[in-house]
Length: 291
Image 1 (tube, rainbow, N blue to C red):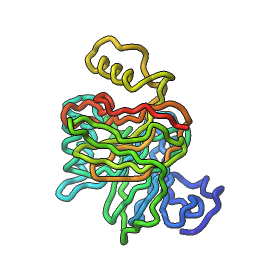
Image 2: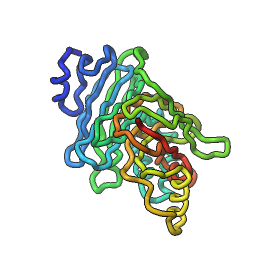
Image 3: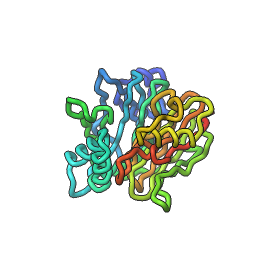
Image 4: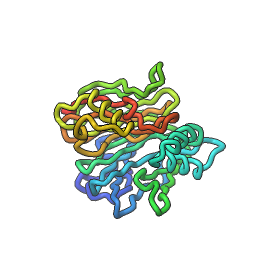
């Protein structure tokens, strides 16, 4: 790739592969994407195997979530899209079914749940093969989901690996409950390695909370909400979630966040493959500080 100044890179068309000099990495390919409700995002159609950074921003405050995935051998793109459609629906039986089927039909590599505050980056190790990019916000709309096809070619380049300063593990506890293994303090502009274990999908998103909100309050709030009982008080949230999008078990990635400092809950809103409830409603949340 040819070199370019940071000023030139700032004007790059959404979906363009940024020159290496604009990113400060000598060998890591970086795809710059802007998502919005009124304009479909663009993306490259071919990249070299290795660490690929998807730098994703939002032109509005609506929910957008870039996901990169591949289809497992013996299955089809239509099956994976159907699983995602089910998993992102509002019917608990459907979301559970979608989560169960998706484990077999496809592999989610991860992505970015956007923030209008600033772009965030998901660095994914993509080996040779065919991948697909979608915006989760487009599922369950009257129009078909737009799918971008990405061909990854060549021998895998594992190095250099992007740097990170913390680690977030996502797994199922011995009693079958979804949990995080993560710090309680992060840099608001830091990077973390994220990995998934077990037999369920997970995500690691940050949702801003009101001052004084605790994990117990969030649990009590969701318990009452799901049971249709009186809530213990006002909503704990001040905004929607932002961060690292859904990942299949056995995968790992590096995420670079860029969020306002403050109090958040690290949470996972992927549905349980048994009940269909979002993992956060089952206790997969952790109050953290971004500083």
